[in-house]
Length: 611
Ligand SMILES: *[C@@H]1O[C@H](CO)[C@@H](O)[C@H](O)[C@H]1NC(C)=O
Ligand SMILES: *[C@@H]1O[C@H](CO)[C@@H](O)[C@H](O)[C@H]1NC(C)=O
Ligand SMILES: *[C@@H]1O[C@H](CO)[C@@H](O)[C@H](O)[C@H]1NC(C)=O
Ligand SMILES: *[C@@H]1O[C@H](CO)[C@@H](O)[C@H](O)[C@H]1NC(C)=O
Ligand SMILES: *[C@@H]1O[C@H](CO)[C@@H](O)[C@H](O)[C@H]1NC(C)=O
Ligand SMILES: *[C@@H]1O[C@H](CO)[C@@H](O)[C@H](O)[C@H]1NC(C)=O
Ligand SMILES: *[C@@H]1O[C@H](CO)[C@@H](O)[C@H](O)[C@H]1NC(C)=O
Image 1 (cartoon, rainbow, N blue to C red):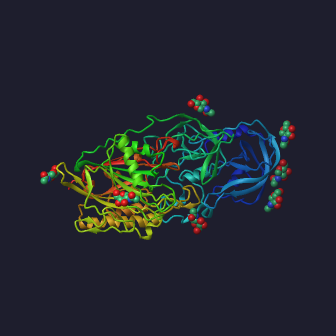
Image 2: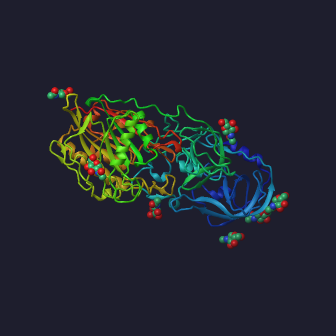
Image 3: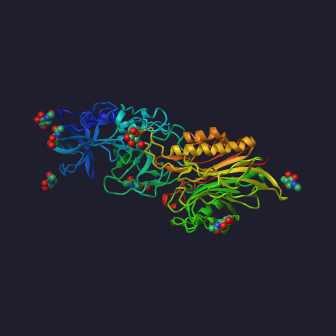
C-alpha cells in the first residue's frame, strides 16, 4: 500500500475504537467474505461517498495489504439521513454477498446497518488515485481461473464463487478491481474506449499503462488480451446523467467515484456525471486508398454487415453513401444482414430482390456503379436474426468487370458441390443448408466468378464464400462468475467453421492453386477456437496477416471495453502470394451511437485473381 494512502487515512483518524472486526477483515484477501451472513459490531470508518441507497465507509485501521480493500458499501437507508461525507461513524450490521443473477460476481457489503455512534465530522476524505496510490491495473489477464487465456475452450471450467481465489491484484484485472471494492478512487486523464450503453455507462482508461492502444485511442483486443485495465463508469451518485453521445477516444474530465460491482462488471459510480472535454479529430476516417485496376491483377472486394437492411430502412441512403464514398465502390461487395422485401414483417416473403435493387439504385444515385446482385433466398424463418426479416448474405458485382462463371443459382435447400474443373454445381449456392450446424443461422453463399477482359473473354477465375456465422448471444460477462467466460454460440460456430473449411478444401483438392476469398461476419476473433479451427482446416490465410494490417487497427466492432474484429477475409495461398492489400474503414466505430449506420465497420481488399 503506497504511503500516501496511509497518510491520508491518518489525517482523518480521530479515534481509536477497539472494534471487533475491521473492514479489511470483512473483505479478506479473497472474493468472498469469511463473515458472509454474520452480524458484525462496531465497524468503524469514515464516510467517503453517499448514494441513493447507502453509503461507502473507509476503515480507520487499514491492514496495509494490497489484497484487501479498506472500504465497504453499507446498503440501507435506515441509517441517520443526516450522515454526510467526512463523518466518522461506528455501525453494526450484517455482512452479505450480493449478486443480482447467478452469472455475476458477488459484491461484499454490509446490510441492515444500525448506527452505533457518530464519532466526528468534517474529516478529510481523499480518493485513491489509480496508478499512483495503487499499482497500475493489469493489462492482459482477467482471472487466475482463466488459465492464462480468457478465450480458452472449454469455457466455464470453474467459477469465482466456488474457487474463491486469493486476490492477485498485480496480475489479474478482476482481482485488481475487487481489491478496491468499495474504495473512493480517482481516474486521472480518462479517455473513453467505447461508446456508452443506453444508460450512459462508459468504459474508460486512465493515465496508467495500457496495452493494445489503437490510433483512435481505444484498446484493440489481441490474442489472450481482452483489456482488463479498463473500467466502466456507471450511474452518477448525485442523480446527474452520463452523456449518451460519447465517442471512442473522447477525452473526459477527471473522474472520482466508488468502485463497485453490478450488472456483470466492476464499475466506478462517479460522484457526478462524465464530462467530455475533447473528441479526436478528424471526426470521420479517411476513405479507402484501395481502388480497382479494372482487371484481374487488382480487383477490389468490399465487405459490410449492413445491419438489418430492408427496402424502407432509414439507413439505406447512408449505406449507399458509405459504399461509394468510403469504400470507393468495390468491384464485388460481400453483404450481410440483407432482409427480405418487407423487412421484419413476419409473413412468407423471403425474396430480397426489392431490398437489393433499392440499395443498387441508391448507390447509383450517389454516383456509384449500377451493380448486379447474386443471392439465394433462405427458407422462411430458418436463418435466425430479427423475426420475419429472413436476413441473408448477398453479393453485389460490377457486371461490366466480373460475371458468375456458368451461373446456375441453387435454391434454399440445395447443397452446393464442387465439380471437376473446379466448378460449382450451384453458382451461387449454399453450403449444406440442411445441416443442423446452421439451425437458426445464415448459410454461407459460394460463388465462382470470372473477370471480363476488355475483349470480352474470361481473364481470371476465382471463388468466393460469403459468411455470416452464428452470433455470440448467450455469452457470459467477461467479468462474470464463469471462468473462462462462456463464449455464446461457440459450438455452432465451430461446426459452421468446419463445414465451410471442408467446402474450401474440396475446391483446393481439385485445384491447389484455386483463388478463393472467404469474407463476412464470422462473429469471432481469429485467435479463438472456432476460427483457429477454420484456418487450420481450410489452410486459408488471414488477410490481416497477409496484408500486414497493424495489430491494433484490426477492429470492426466495439463491444464492452474492446475494439474487436468480428469481420474478416481469409484467402487461399494463390491469392495471398500476390501482394494482397486490406483495410478496415472505421466509419461506424468512430462516430457517436446515434450517428452509426451499422454496428460493424466495413472493410476493403485489393487482390490479384489472375490465373
Ligand atoms: C462496541 O463498542 C462499544 C462502545 O462503543 C462497547 O461497549 C462494546 O463492547 C463494543 N463491542 C464489541 C463487540 O467490541
Ligand atoms: C443479526 O442481527 C439482527 C438484528 O439485530 C438479528 O435479528 C439477527 O438475529 C442477528 N443474526 C445473528 C445470526 O445473530
Ligand atoms: C437531521 O437533522 C435535523 C436538523 O438538525 C434534525 O431536525 C433531524 O431530526 C435529523 N434527522 C435525523 C434522522 O436524525
Ligand atoms: C457455469 O457452470 C456452473 C456449474 O455447472 C453453472 O452453475 C453455471 O450456470 C454456469 N454458468 C454459465 C454462465 O453458464
Ligand atoms: C467539463 O469540462 C469543461 C471543459 O470542457 C470544464 O470547463 C468543466 O469544468 C467540466 N465540468 C466538470 C464537472 O468537470
Ligand atoms: C428475384 O430475382 C430473381 C433473379 O433476378 C428471380 O428469379 C426471382 O423470380 C425474383 N423474385 C421475386 C419474388 O421477384
Ligand atoms: C483477350 O484479352 C485477354 C486478356 O487481355 C488475353 O489474354 C486474350 O488472349 C484475349 N483474347 C482474345 C481472343 O483476344
